[in-house]
Length: 306
Image (cartoon, rainbow, N blue to C red):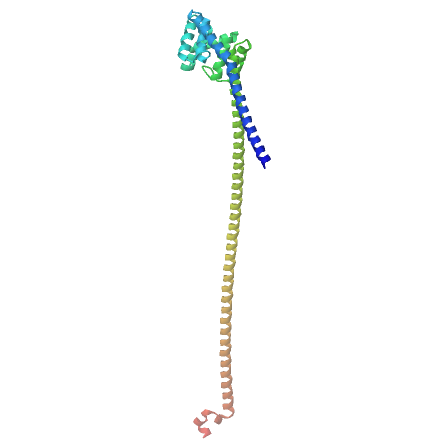
């Protein structure tokens, strides 16, 4: 019993130790991550300070980079107003990249209005001539449908050209576009499969309804045929019954006529027999009278028989 209790105590202690070890390892990893990130954060802050000093001295390229840092929040708190301020300063000094970015922002906000249409056409021409930054912005416009038709394939074509000669923004944008395209392709495939299933289900339903309709028609035709046969049989039975009744009436009439004729014949025969009998009796009386006139009833009236 004591061994069992000791064993349980050891198990509980081991569990507590394991839990503490896990927490310790987590804290160590978190601390190491912070330590590794500190140089990058410090480096970004230092880079921003360095570029800001140059920008404040009027360096157009530094002004553009400071504007981008404010836009992305790299090394400084994100601030779009400051970003536009420094990008505008850079563009005013003729920085081409700053001009491209301002054009993108303007088209994104206002569309192809004013001179933007001509500026976008000029941007496309520079991209075709091999300008990497122009290629980047043409690709970005196609990627987001800003001023140009949204087209992932066309976007990747121009972004890859720019990324190939070292435009990091183009490389990052290309990754984003490819990931979005993959998601769209998956969604499109899913929609196509759902549509295929829906079409198949609709086809099966149509075939089912067509089969039911055919069965209803066959049943209706069958019932119509049965009704027609029944009506025909009823008509035939009615005609046969009428014919039977007619024949029966004719037979009855014929029998009645024959009976009447037979009765008339019998009456005539009886009449003739009676007449014959009377004639014979008359003839018998006459013969008897002639042979013995005094034997008859009329003898009392004869003087000769008195």
